[in-house]
Image (tube, rainbow, N blue to C red; front, side, top):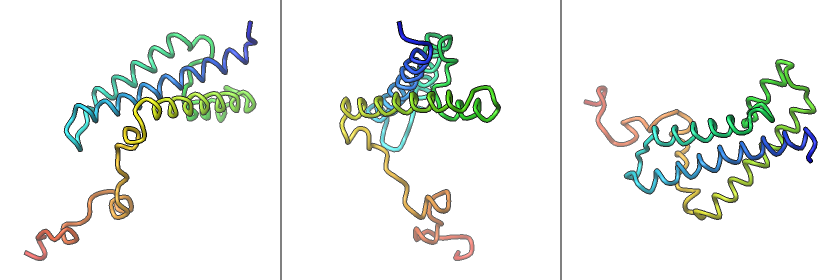
Length: 143
């Protein structure tokens, strides 16, 4: 029988694995059925929600159901979880997420995982598309 710490570690790793694996495959499969540049956010959100809901129901009594390093960080900062235990949670979560990522890569291949293109530097620095004058479109000032 594993110790309590080992059970918590395994529960967090499995829960995080489930969330990431289901989430990545939901995003990938959405790209297969939707036209390029569109997303069915309801389906993607539902997949994530069901994954976290099932994981919390199945494993929450063992580990508390964090499954997200940010949640664990909040517990550590507020004193609800000791830093050493928080570190164990983080390692389990990162391990589970990494395994999910590598398995998703093995299932759908590099092209499937890299389906989303990074925004251009102009878009990333401004937070939106290039201004109309840079795209050669008329503006109010230019008539």
